[in-house]
Amino acid sequence: MEFALAFAMQEIPLVLFTALAPSGTVCMVILMVMLLTHHFEMERCPRLNQVTWVPLAVTTVGLVAAAASLGTPANALYVVMGVGRSPLSNEVACAVVFLATCGVNWLLSFAQRESLPVKRAFAVAIIGLGVVFLASIAGAYSVETIATWSGPLVPANLILSGLVGGALLARATILLALDGGYAPELLGRLSWCAAVALVASVACLALQWFQQAGMSNAYGTLASHVPVYPLLVAAYTLMVAAAIGLTLRFSGRRWPEVAAIALAFGGLLVLRFGFYLIHMTPGLAM
Image 1 (cartoon, rainbow, N blue to C red):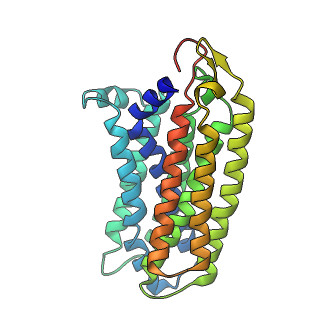
Image 2: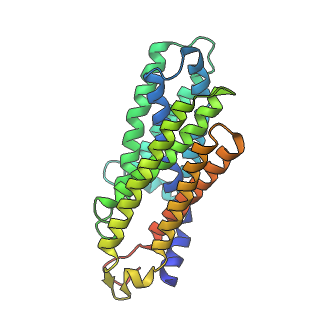
C-alpha cells in the first residue's frame, strides 16, 4: 500500500486536473448546447455567456495544476514539440485551443451589440472543441504499458465522471445566470443526468475492479496492495449521491447548492486519487 500511496501523492496535480478539467469542459458544452437549442430567451443569452467564466475557471485551474506536474518550465518545450505524436502533447494543444475559444466567447459577451450568427458559430465551435478535448484527456490516460490503465473502461470512467461533475456544475452556473430566476424543470433534468452518469460510472468502476483485482506483478496482486480502492469508490458514490439529493430536495437554495458542488467535487477528487493508487505495471513498479 505504501508504494501506491507514495505514487498517488506525487500525482496530486494530475488528480486535480482529471477531476476539474473534464467537469468544466462538459459544463461548457452543456451551456452551449442550451444556447443553441433555445433553452434561454435571447435577452438572457448574454448573461449566460457572461457566467461561462465559471466552467472556464474550473478547467483553467485544472490545466494549471497539470502544468505543475511537468516539474520545470523547460519541460513544457518538450510537450509543445510532441504535438501530433504524443497523447500528452495533443491533450495540451486541445486544451489551449478550447480555452482560448471559450475565453474569446466570454469577452464578446460583454459587447454592446452581439451578432446572433457569431454567437451561434462560437457555440458550435466550443461544443466541437470540447468534445475533442475530452476525448484527448481520456485517450491520454489509457496506457497499454500500465496494466491497470489499459482498456476501454479507463477512458469511459474518466468521461462518465466528467459528465457527473459537468452536469452539476452546469446547474450551479445556470442558477448564477438566472440571477434570482428559477427553472426547476431544467435544473431537475441536469440533476437526473448526473444521477444516470453516476450509476453508469459506478458500474464501470465495479467492472474494472472485478477484471483487475487479481492482476499481479513482483509485489503481489492489485487487491493486496490497494485494499482501500473499493472504499474510495464507495465514498465517491455516497458523496456524489448526496450532492444530487441536495440539488433535488433543495433546488435553487443557495447553501444546499453550494454544499452539493463541494460534495460532488470532493467525491471526484477521491475517485481520481484512487485512479493513481491503482497504477501498476507488469514489472517491478506499482
